[in-house]
Image (cartoon, rainbow, N blue to C red; front, side, top):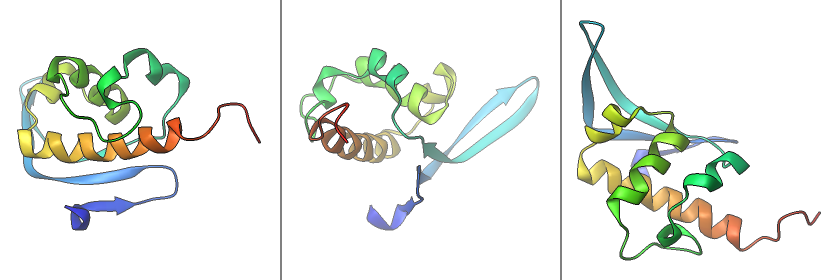
Length: 109
């Protein structure tokens, strides 16, 4: 899985094993990678509790889909078309992001 993650200063991009194909205004739109943006305060509104504090176990997919959409800039329809293997890769990266964020004190310099 690590060879599918491209490290960038402020974001992480995951190349999808199974690209998403969506009809948009009559045209076929293909999404072959997703970029996970840096976490912002607005994302806290949709963070599933099961992802906070480290590697999420017993993750409820209904809770994680809105968060994946918000942090990756995907619509609900696009998220719905994610292959489960690709979704697992995204969740793994998000879990790492959140475990790092929760281990730091907010507001400390």
